[in-house]
Length: 167
Figure (spheres, rainbow, N blue to C red):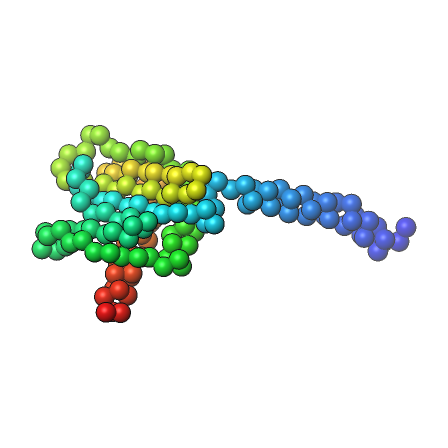
């Protein structure tokens, strides 16, 4: 056998089956993923201090209530675009939200500590995480939670600004 024939044989017998297996394996993983955007229904986000979560957003109803800088409760209808929801879904997937523990609370925290409830609802499943800003768990997990919270708040603020400017 010539050198070229050996290389072709090597590629055909090792590399091609490996690539086929990768496509099959990862294709099945993506197909059977538990949290697919095609099954996405809504996001529910609450935050506040301690057990008083006054700031609430629900994408299913579009109801958004929050405490403004003058400590008054404001209620508005705020619809997120499909692109905003897709962005949040992908950001949650990138940060590993589906693997977060359900309760990330610090029971020993004293004073006014921010607390967040994040819930993504899908056709067959939902994922709900309660996060306390004073949570003393793994640093990577705390960072991922805080980044996701900032992204959700950023999307809500941008949607509110778009709505205000369109009127």
